[in-house]
Image (cartoon, rainbow, N blue to C red; front, top):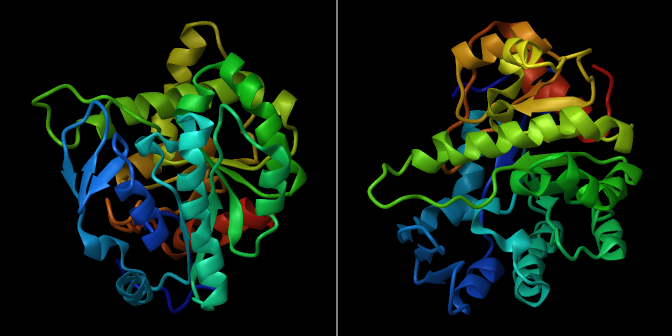
Length: 310
């Protein structure tokens, strides 16, 4: 990953993960998944996963981001943990612990970081969400793709998304929980369940999103599971791609030049925003030229986050 000394404006990574100490402690107090035993993560339906403590050390993370030339990184809750869909009494202490990170960043004047808020998608507190979105370190709301699995699910979630729209902030759609069959490689969920969830969420938005939320800026991580590349199949099966929605964005984590170039041929350059998914993947500059790099890392994220002109 190179630095960006010639970039005009802050270089943004729209998608990283880091667990604050309060969140780690809350996971360790649990007796069933999601829970931590020491640094071993236990999720229902998945094999234990050994977490590297260094991945959640903010001082080390900042050194890495500075070395990579990242001016602002947005940290998000790990939606595959399934916290947003737990019973409200179970999710509340975990969500509170997650959001304490915003207070920690502000109190300690830690440069270079903001967070995506999260809510219980089944029993959201809309007034509490509206207050949370006013926090100076909160840049929008992340929701699991499983909460947008089809148009009906999107309609149920619309009151939550409307609070974000009213705050003039964006929504980030991230993969949710996924079951992995025994014996599959570790990358299996990321290449199967995650991409399928994102594709379904994108199509749900394509069908029902804009009529419900005409001004909402929304981004799908992982290039929306490459959903727009299926536009020819969509047309063959009776649908239409239609005009490119200027308020829909595509975050690039885990993809490189070939996939990004293919997306540009369908949706153009303007909707693409950089995200790394650090620590699970690394920042990637697809090498498509200085003007593209400026758009991907600076101009387009500014449009997603605050509606800045492209």
